[in-house]
Length: 210
Image (cartoon, rainbow, N blue to C red; front, side, top):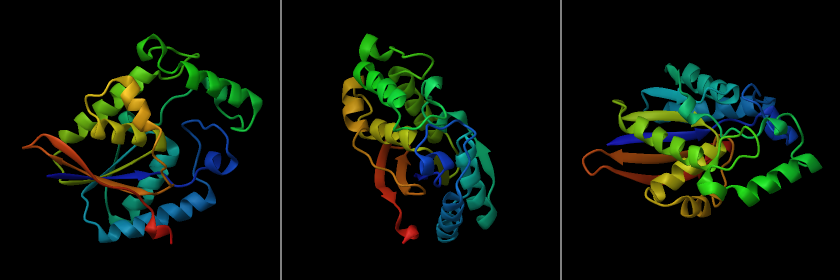
């Protein structure tokens, strides 16, 4: 039985400012404190390795956990955040430009069998496939207890694929929109290799933040 602890990264500067982020957006001061707190939480949870998204805010969170608990960090692009249109990077989520682009994305996300794009973003079909690939990757890991530090949107799709592994895109995105994940919230899932079955144990435990 493999046990995976999924952790959303600490608050980033982009989260705090409500701007669309790049892969290089770092943790805010609050996020750095959150990372240290969740690192202390893992001193009471037995894990053998950490896998982190390649994005800076996730790597910083993972490193805080690793430093506190003498663990190694491995990075993997499968756990990166969903790539949005480059036109959004750096602009306020409250701006008219952001609202217009996100409105088009929401309206057309499942057009052309999920392959529609506004510009250069990861389309709906690609994103769902990456979540499935991420779960397949975790199935093959030899470690019994892993921490995966990543992002809200990819976590939402990973949970969706666990809950509805054979659903079509419409089914997946109906479920996908129903998760609310807190910075450094911990979610737990297990994989039984004999039964070839995933199970979600808990989602978004952030009791360590008080």
